[in-house]
Image (tube, rainbow, N blue to C red; front, side):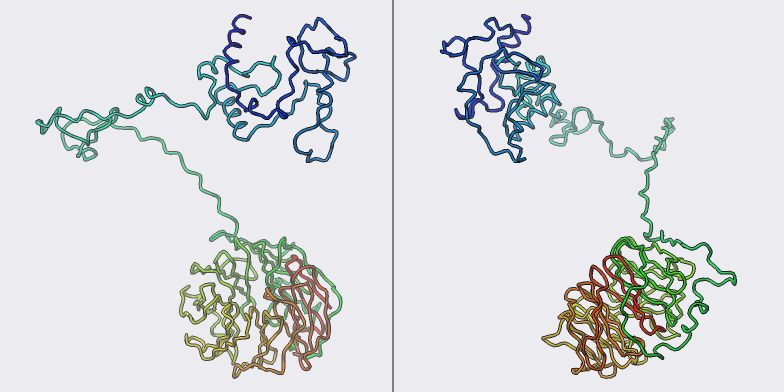
Length: 576
């Protein structure tokens, strides 16, 4: 007990760590007055010989008597501090817990962190309790005495300790001595405890002295980071059916003539009508769908690119299920496009990669990248130029690739903003591009000079362009909520045809035409698909299709009233 009391004497000299003594009078801890002062109390002592000399009330729910008198003034003190943020006003009134009396205490973050670090590193901290009988130090009192009860943030090394830790240089040497031991080295003297490296150290010793053979240190092989699926060289595809071929050995590439014999007919040969109800929903993408493309000529397969980095191939006519998933990008897919025969397709994404795929086997055949983000990719539509494709890039250029050599054969560099669309016109001798610079430019194929430049002060950006089935016009989705029509021969705007009444500001919603050219359609930002009459320009129907923006839609080429819609809600729907 004597040792403990001597420690207690030392501890009582500690400064108040939490600044409790500096609190204003109204906020000081409520400690009962010393027993020395005679205070007249109306209530008699409950327990005169108090064995613990208690000065604070500690009760449990099982207690039947109190061993401490509480002054009336203490019991009637007003509540102080901020209002309880949790709304339960009775929460802190009964502060008697099974583990003891709960004391309200406030301290700054800095004081708390200093004490917490001191306790966890040095093994002691100041006791924050307001009970004068409680020990002032918690933890190791020996460590506290050794460090003078200082917290971790106030400990400083003494000058003698600093001198011991400081590195020392060797003697500067004698100015008179030029070479050898004790020669003058001046401020370039080596440090104590460091080996001197001679000028010829490391050079092969050609003398006859036997050299000790050093055992090579074992090298720990570094673990290589596992590449993401779909990264460069890691492209895969998954077939989701039971068998790649049917009983006749035909794959899904073969059009299903037994279910839909009419798909060999010429597209647009029958009159079309506006769809009214959803007859099928394709689910499988976990994020928004950004682009869909129907298989060329027949339209019996549907390709979709999504923000979940996957490309999926869907069956349209037989079972309506997912046939294959292509894992080839590590960021959102921006565009996909089929070759003329549909056996290959190109994809591009925000990972700055363009990839050529085999539709049937799912194999990634080639990869292209110039370090910029491609926004649109298009095969040259001529049969003899199917090895050439054009890509509109984020660095304002249109780049022409030869897939056989993998090289860039031409650059069309005139736009002042990222290129959004590429549309071939005039029997594929020319193509039209639109950009964020709010202009339309027409080019002769393989000649990087603009032949037509369309820019008006009132024009807006046109992020989606579709060719009319007659090939005489192209429709451009303008971001001021209208669709503008331009001629493909002289690139003049047809002022009589203007389609408005939908809301697409900020979205690159695709424009669609019915196979016979009778209806023009567009998705909008509110999840609708709007249909206009091509001749009159009036809205004929507004179809509530999705919960989010309908970014893409396609008319089935051999059907009278079927439309596929894709949205940022991750769903693809078939309407009839």
